[in-house]
Length: 365
Length: 237
Image 1 (spheres, chains in turn cyan, blue):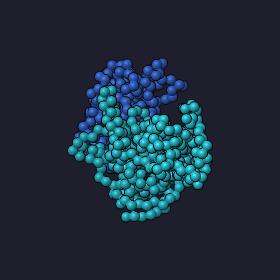
Image 2 (cartoon, chains in turn yellow, purple):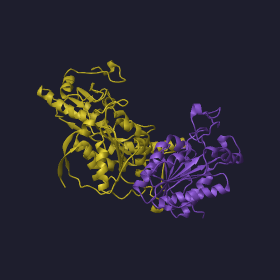
Image 3 (cartoon, helix red, strand yellow):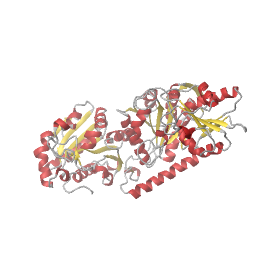
Image 4 (cartoon, helix red, strand yellow):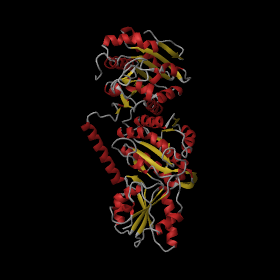
């Protein structure tokens, strides 16, 4: 099978869910992800699957919890304010170790913000998001093709780790159209996982729970979860290094839509005789610390570009540990930087005060 | 069991468990526990059990039932869980005619957290957050969840019972049986509200607590079938 099709990002998410054998989808309207529940409201029944519009994001994620507990593949989607509401359920899903796929088509914030593309949910996506000591595996696509591929992979990863997996997209990716090449065969909805809570008739009793009253017991659970996160880092770290010829000693670090902008900025800079690489994290949790650390050994500088006031830059600095200067350029509130302004910023050693950092900490040494 | 002496939860756990066995559905039952005194109910029911976040049990049960339609799915929720933080989930599960059974324990107080005022706390009732008694000017009125849900076209069977006398316990068991039968017949949303005792936070002995249900609670929460769209009554058997 090898089909090439023009599709919208939000549609690619739906196609991937269907092709991955997603049995249930629970959603709630919020812009700019509305095409996901809209497409799935007709696609899912056509494939004999379940679509349900919940009364709230809270209800939707708790329906995900219930369906995931029965051992079927399940997904929900939303956008930033709705993802905040889902955090309660995501924490419970992580605590009860259930597989689930959660799509965030990010928009501007804080608060109601706006419906323009943003990357300001990086902290929420990579630091656990809700309450408690847990992490979510977070995949950051930067094309419609990757929206399809990573959403499909997300179902496998969720089951591999019995953990929530986030697709961290944004309004640009959700709304844009690009060709998508589908090489993998679509899967039927798989048999429910053997431990699924479908009654003791399966031969065992299933308790789905995240309550451990004894601190030592919960500590042991959390340590086991931590081992799982470490395994994610060993086995499923993903990133891309672009335009890194031997003598390239400067680079952008960006993910998602911001990486697309940087890719064009790299071209603009090369027209002016400057050779610049692009390091693009695809898993933002786990973050590719080691590859970036190795790269930073031979860099004169890195510039982090984000559609936020600087969130991933914290991970970049943790990776680089002062081996080279880390500059930052970001636009916030739903503004997408142009390649020209990013190239200009790169040339002028641009820096803005990053949230929470005094300016001198961000100064080029 | 971890419940206090004189508490109704033990009786009601037993009734639900007996009904699951008598209907022959224990091995395909999936229960959803609340947050509240019944938070550990998964230790007491010998079937698959899920622990839900506070108030979200009807949404969790919806996910289970939609993913596994031949499971017999029930929630077991208190008044803080269902009538306060979980109102939206309860209302919309009923409005959708979700084919699940809801056991709603109304004891007019938050038990697990230490006796705070609940949405069903009676006017004048002293709790740890209404120390002078519930004042309607300050804290409004008790919510009649069953009557509210009975206004929804999606609901099928809603009744209010009490667990304070042998006669009422027997009636409660018959109502629970019917509520599960509604689900087995694919007829939709069924809810049994049970007026229950909380001697600890009512500051009463078990006997006085049982009398208080008759004397005081039933003033706001009258017993009886509130909605029945099944076309049949409650079996006396």
